[in-house]
Structure formats: C-alpha cells, structure tokens
Length: 147
Image 1 (cartoon, rainbow, N blue to C red):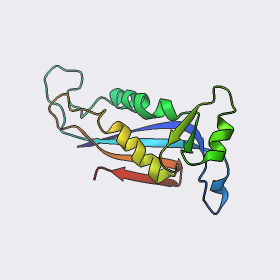
Image 2 (spheres, helix red, strand yellow):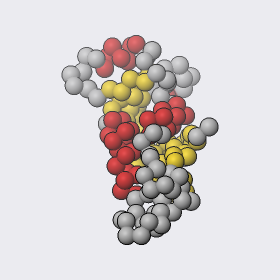
Image 3 (cartoon, rainbow, N blue to C red):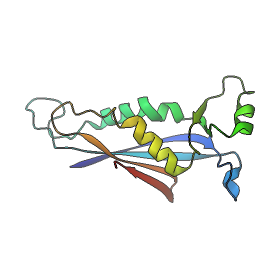
Image 4 (cartoon, rainbow, N blue to C red):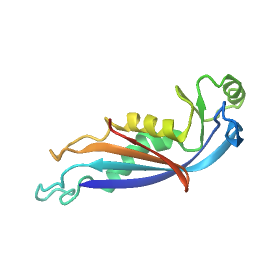
C-alpha cells in the first residue's frame, strides 16, 4: 500500500548558470509530496490500526526535517559566491546552503536523503519512503524515488 502527504512552502532560489530567467533571484510556492509504502497496520487497539502511517506523523516528520528549514528561506548553491556574499549582508536572513544547484530535481533528491531515515518502521509493517515529488510550479515537478 502507498500513502502520500502533500505540504507546501515558499522559498527563493536561482540557477546560476541557466540561460534564461531562472538565473535571476526569484521564488516559488513549492509543494512537496511524501510517498510511503508499507503494509496496513493490523495491531488491534493502536491509534494507527488500519493505516500505513498516521498522516499527521507523515506531516510532522516532513516539517521537522525539510519543510520548516526551507520555508521562507533562500536555497543557494554553495558555489554561488556572489549570492552568498549578498545574503550574508542581510542580518538574520534565512539561508540554506546546498551542495547542489537548487533545481527541482536536486531539491527532490536532497529532500529524499533528509527524510529517508526519518520514516521508520515502528509497527513491523515494512514502512519505507519510496518517493519525494517536488513541485516547483503547479505544472513542473521532479520525482526522486529510492534507487
């Protein structure tokens, strides 16, 4: 069985070597979908009976590990020195420095890596993260699935 929880956040970024508009500082209303796989929990009397995982727990974990860190932040590539220098002049600016260019593809992979170990099988139902889908716009997204 698969379940998916969608969350949204706002963040800025730029693609430094892009040959079009994305080379400029800009932002998006991102959406992230977390898809988990596992067996339905059959343990009698537990709150999660009949579920793969409680959706509120899916949300809490995603917020703790990705969404709260990225929401209203500027996601910047470590080697984008001009932007990093600029952001460092802004007192208390929320900046997330990444080892990769912040494309939808790379952000989906980074989010997967941050979340992979966080979703643990606590009921013996073989729970596992199988996909992170990151929407950059309503019409553009990237999927990263477990290799």
